[in-house]
Image 1 (cartoon, rainbow, N blue to C red):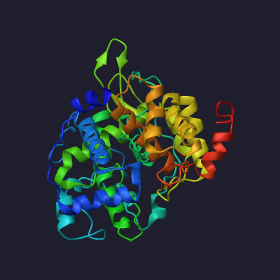
Image 2: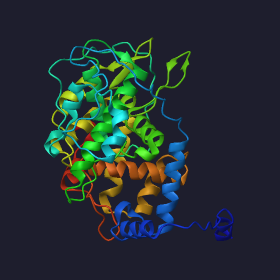
Image 3: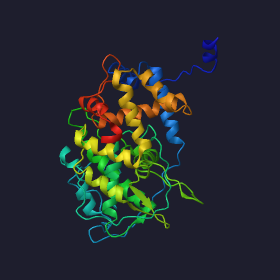
Image 4: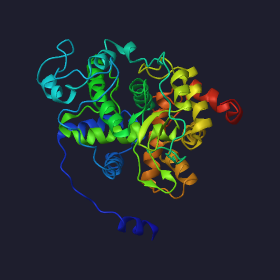
Length: 375
């Protein structure tokens, strides 16, 4: 009877797929990337994730030629298009209108020669901090579509540069950091072409044919958004607010907080040479334990669940049991997001073995540690 009820709540949908896309799905399933056991599992989660993304508002439109005030180093470079020293051709032509207002100093900072260039160095100068903000963030796990922390820390580093003299309006920050993210993502695509198979552009906007969606995904899941102002202030979302790394004042001007400045210093040198070093992982988890315990919970749950090598179904069940208010799809998405982040920090092995997740040596060491006392 239970089986009949389950079938009654489902419908078979026939959708034609290009052969090349079917092959990519099958390759991912055979390689056990993400722990999917069938095409149906992969497609269900892909649709669920896209619908979750579409629930968020479109990215704010940019003016045709915005002019952003800044310091002498930060003045906008007029009508200059993307530099010939980076790349030429159809792709450059398509990117030029988008990046024409990227200032010379920032273009120089973001141009990459190799993977070592992705290291995020803490600024020598402390930016102007927002100490008494009005954003009342929620302490809870992050959505599964936030699946790489480097991108958010990169966005925090950009904010530190933009606010050396004073906080800036939140919408101005979104415009500037999104434009910079396009350029940086383009640079990373060049590094991905070395044949190593590394995926460096996760969460950065790179798909010009779907620009609004690409920008919305970056802004929502790598940076964050501001909710409506209420009696108790603003309820923001996204990692930077969740980590208490940024705040906004009464005029909606954003800047780093004391914890955000500390995070920049403690993760000095973090790069896309993945996984991150164990010392960086410990520093990041300690930071979350102090300032974002709701987000830290997801990592602790992964460490606990993966201890005995669960398959994907068991892992999702562990997450769902703790948060009974989540749908199965939500639990699945969030679990996979934390697995991806745990892999980024070197806590979970990058590939499944016999369809099961396993901890790395770093993950096992942290799992043996009294986390409440030492992390």
